[in-house]
Length: 137
Image (cartoon, rainbow, N blue to C red):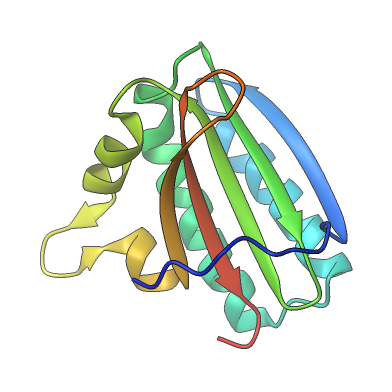
């Protein structure tokens, strides 16, 4: 998985969502991602990939968050979308990546995303997981 630098220009659109751990993570995050993808003219096939990422996050992120909420910043540019998940518990980003592996398929996040990176929040030091989906696919 390549690890391109973060875009230099500011996001065209962005939303920060904090969702209580539980059954609403998938539906709420899916709607936010869908709305921002539509505003960015995201191709349908790449939107499908983004929804696969949302499903994986909904299934596993709740067990890896540092708080009782799943926090995701969704940002779009003209050519890509990024989901930044965190704060995560120490080692949570790597664990979330392990959780997203399916037998016979491999890691879903790494298969559908163009870049996945683990980083630390510069203010809090907490781990974050960034998942980037390019629209050109």
